[in-house]
Every structure is written in structure tokens, then in C-alpha cells.
Image 1 (tube, rainbow, N blue to C red):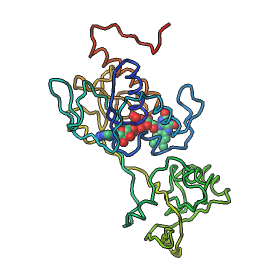
Image 2 (image 1 turned 90 degrees about the vertical axis):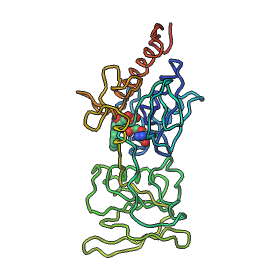
Image 3 (image 1 turned 30 degrees about the horizontal axis):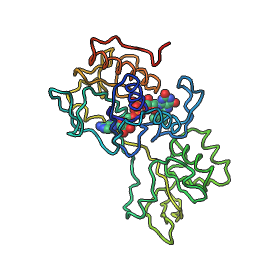
Image 4 (image 1 turned 135 degrees about the horizontal axis):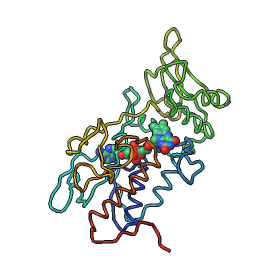
Length: 310
Ligand SMILES: Cc1cc2nc3c(=O)[nH]c(=O)nc-3n(C[C@H](O)[C@H](O)[C@H](O)COP(=O)(O)OP(=O)(O)OC[C@H]3O[C@@H](n4cnc5c(N)ncnc54)[C@H](O)[C@@H]3O)c2cc1C
């Protein structure tokens, strides 16, 4: 599997149910794709059988459903696929009989705080957070004005003192969340400010905030900061693999096969008329792709379609 977002993770689980072993690559240091990186605390209400589940819990459940022998290689962006007589060689690391491309919106990287900083400062600057409890009883600065920044600030405020800093007076995220933040006594909203400098003074991050327009600049001290400026995604590398695209996404047939035999795709990376970017749909596509792979690899076998038999 290329991509350990929800669809790649579920595809590995479903592959295991069919007796296939799989290895998953992800370009990021954490698995989980968009739900884990972009909206870890948002309540997702459109995944069948979960009335509501947040992004982190969904990914945790998907991870815990994987068999022990599933290998996950993080911090590895797959760049190269070569076909040989035995299958496909990915980046000279692994030989696979079949591939599922589940790269979603693409290999994404956080948009970084545009300030020069030494390593010891960098360690206190976060682009995603796994557990807000790690920040308990600290002074935390959250930078950004979109839904991710607002969600993170609300979640962190359960455990820490939070200041949210945005370059405009208006936030891009939901008004409901802005209202909620304004109602919390341990949250301060600082606008319109841009971060101009960051230093470590007396074991605290000392950040110079430049006031926009005629607003005075100021200094703020934090234990740690979280930057939620969004992510840049890139799927352009897929073209180099000889895969036929439909715009920037992968064209697939109804079996989820790409134009190359043995290479399938599922999730947000694919495109066909009527597709909508939803997790549950990606799960279904992963099931189609794995079933198709089984038919490719074992044409003589009568497939057991259901996970258990009665
Ligand atoms: C703010 C927001 C809210 C959303 N809310 C909902 C919702 O409520 N319900 C819902 O159903 N959907 C929602 N979605 C959409 C949902 O997140 C996507 O449909 C889903 O994440 C697609 O899963 P995926 O596994 O296909 O791709 P992704 O989640 O994008 O994961 C792809 C993974 O592939 C990795 N990758 C990419 N390229 C490479 C490479 N070359 N090598 C190795 N790894 C690579 C990436 O790092 C990433 O981890 C929301 C999306 C956003 C942005």
C-alpha cells in the first residue's frame, strides 16, 4: 500500500482477511492521513456504525485492527515503481505482487512557521499533536485562523492555557468555534498579529508578534507552540509511474484497477464520475481493490467474499 491514511490502513486489514500480507508506506512520520493530521479532534458522523468518532480515535481503531505482521514504514515517500518478472519494486525497498495506491490528497507537508530557529526551539514547535494531555498545565500558543487551528485550540484548552494568534481579526473557521473560544476563561485571542521572531529565554519561547496595520507589536511567552497553517499536498509524482490520470487524480476502472495491470488505487486519490471524497467510500473501494487483486493472483480460487462464514 502506498499511503497510510484511513483507506490504506483499512486496505491492509482487509488484505489480511483474505490471507494477503502487506506493507504500508507513508511519507509522514505518523500514519492516519487527513483525519489524523488535519482534523484529529473533529467529530466524524458519517462513518457507518459509528454515530460519532473523532479523527484520532478512528485512526487508532484502524491501526489496532492491523495484524502484527503488517509492516508500516513511515517517513518514506515512495518515488519509484519498477515492474519486473516477479512483480513491482518500490524504491528498491520491497518487491510486491500488487500495489494499491492510496495517497489521498497527496504526500503532504505542513506549512511551516516562516521563522529561523535552532533545534532546541524547533522541538517546542509542533505541526500536529497526538494527545492534548501532553501539553497539560502549560502555556501554549496556537497559530492559525482556520478550522484546524480553532479545533486544536479548543481541545488544548481542556488541559492548558491557550493563546490563539491570527493575522486577521476574522477567523476562517466556524463562527461557532470562535464563540466557544471567546467563552473560555483560559483562552486569549490575539489578532491581528504575525510572528516575527522566536527566541528561547529562561526556558520559554519568547515570540515577537508584529501588529498588523496600526496595532502595536508585542512579546508573548509560551512553553510550546502549535502551528496550524495548513498542509501542502502533492500527487504529481504519480505521473512518473506511468499511471493514467484524470486531472490530478488516478483514473480507475470499476475494479479499481489503474491502466497498469497489478496496480490498483482507492480513496481520495482516485477519480470517476460521481465520486465524493468520503472515508466510507474509500473503505468500499479498498474492498473492491483487494477482491480484484485476489482474482488476479488466484484466478482458479473460489473467493470467500465475507469475512467469516456460517
Ligand atoms: C477538514 C476536513 C474534514 C473532513 N471531514 C470528513 C468527514 O467528516 N467525513 C468523511 O468521510 N470525510 C471527511 N473528510 C475527507 C477525508 O478525510 C478523506 O476522504 C480521507 O482522508 C481520504 O483517505 P485516504 O486514505 O484516501 O487519503 P489521505 O487521508 O489523504 O491519506 C493519504 C496518505 O498517503 C500518504 N502519501 C501520499 N503520497 C505518498 C507517497 N508517495 N508515499 C508514501 N505515502 C504517501 C500521505 O502522507 C497520507 O498519510 C474531511 C477532509 C478534510 C480536509
